[in-house]
Image (cartoon, rainbow, N blue to C red):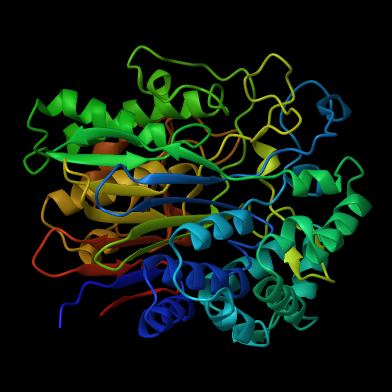
Amino acid sequence: MTRDRAIATPHHLATSAGEHMFAKGGNAVDAALAAAAVLTVVYPHNTSIGGDLTALVSTGSTDPVLVDGFGYAPAGVDGTRWGSSGRVPSRGPESITVPGAVKGWKHLHDEYGSLPLATILAPAIEHSHGYEIGRSVRTLIEKVSQESEAGRALIISLFGNDFETATTASNPALGTTLERLAAAGLDDFYRGEVAMKIDSYLRSIRPDFALSDLADYEVKLEQSLSMQFAGLRVHTGGAPSQGFSFLRFLHDLRESLGTDSDVTAMTDAALAEVWIDSFTRSDAIRDSILAEGVNGETLLSPSLSASNSVPAPSAGGDTIGLAATDGHISISLIQSLYSSFGSLCFDPETGVLFQSRGSMFALDASSPQYVKPRVRPPHTLMPVMITDKANVPKIVQSTMGGKAQAQIHARLLIHLLRGDSPSEAISRPRWVSGAKAEQDPARTITVEDDVSTELRTILSHGAEGDVRTTPEHSDSLGHANVIDLRGAKILAASDPRSDGSAWIG
C-alpha cells in the first residue's frame, strides 16, 4: 500500500483526529479541519473559533490557492476614541475583530471536503467535555492569571478556581456551539442562531459591533505570493500577511549566494549577516507599511524601506499551524488568537474566546495601518508551501511564532535543503532576530539555550545589545510542523516545543 497521507499538528489529540478522518476515507482538508477544530478546544491559548484563519491549498496542478480568513474591524469603529497615536489596546474588547476562522472552515469544507461536517467536528465536540491540560497551555495559565483581573477571570472560566493544580479542563458550551454548527451549517456562526448569541455578547462589551458585521463577512481568495529559490517555488501569503518578509530574505540570500542558491556551503557567519540585515528591514516594513491592499510586488521590491513612526505592535505569537497531505491535496493551515488567550474576552454562553488581532491597527490617521471600518489589520500569519516548477507540492510548512514566523520558515527550509529530515530540521536549536518588546532594539537577538557558543559569538556581531537566551525548545520560538514530499517516501514531523505529533499512513 502506498503511504501518501500525512498530518502534523501541535497537539497529539488534533493529529489523532486527522488520522481518524483519513481512516474514514476523508482527504487532507477533512483531516486538517478536524485537527483545527480540536485545537480550538485543547489549545485555547493559541486558537479559537473566535479567531482568524489562513491556508494554502494545492491540488498539484496550479498555483496553491490562498484562503484569507482574516477578520475585519466592525463597520462602526471610530479610531479617534482611543487617541491619535500608538496602537489599538492589546487586550480587551477594543482589540477584537470579526472572527474569520469559521468562515474559512466553511470555504475549505465546501470546496474541498469529502466527509460530513458532523463527522469532522465530532472529535472536537468529544474533547470539549474533558481533556488533559497540555504542557504548552500550562506555561501560559499562571502568566495570564497574574497579568490582570481580566486575565485571572478568564483563566478561572476556562480551567476552574483550582487552575494552578488542575490537570484536566472542559468547555461544554463550546461543544454545544460546535454541535449547533455541525447540525445547522458553519454559516450559522455568521447568520444564524450562533450569530445572534455572539452579536449579543460582542455588543454588550463593545457597542460599535453589529450583527451585520458578522452577516456581511466573507473570506477572500488570493493568489499566493511566490518566488523561485534553489530550483523550487516558494509560496506564502501576500498582504496583509507578513509572508513577504520570508521571500525578501530568500531574495537577499540568493543575491549573496549567486544564481544557484546553494545553501549547503554557506558559513554561519555569512548567513547570520544576511539574515539580520534582511529581517531588520522587513520588520520595519511590516510594522509601518504592511496593510490590506498593498501590492505584493511592492513589498518584495529591494528598494522598499521604512522607518517606524508608530510603535511596533506586541510580538504576539499565539497561533497554531498544521500541515496535511493525501497524495492529491496538500494544505498548510494557520489559526490564531494573536496574543496568549487573545483579547481575554470570553462568552460563557457560546464558549467562544475572541482574538486580539485588532491591536495590530495604528491610531495615527496618516498611517497605512490606521484602524478603519471593515478593514483587515496587518497579520503575522503565513502558511507556506514549496512546490516544483510544475506546482507539485514538495514541502508543506506551518508554524506558530508571531513576528518570528518568517524566520522559523526560513530556518526550516535552509536545514531541509542542507539534507535534514523534518524531525532534524525542527529539533535544531533556534534563534531569531528582532524586537520582542516595544523597548527592544530592532537588532535584538534571541537564542535558545542550546545554541553553540561559537554561533552566539557570530550573532553578537550583528546584534544591538546583548544576545538574549531562552530555554531549549522554548514555546516562545514557535511550534513548527513539516511534511517533506521530495523523496521516495513521505516524511513528517511536529515540533518538540509543542504537545504535537505527526502521522503518516
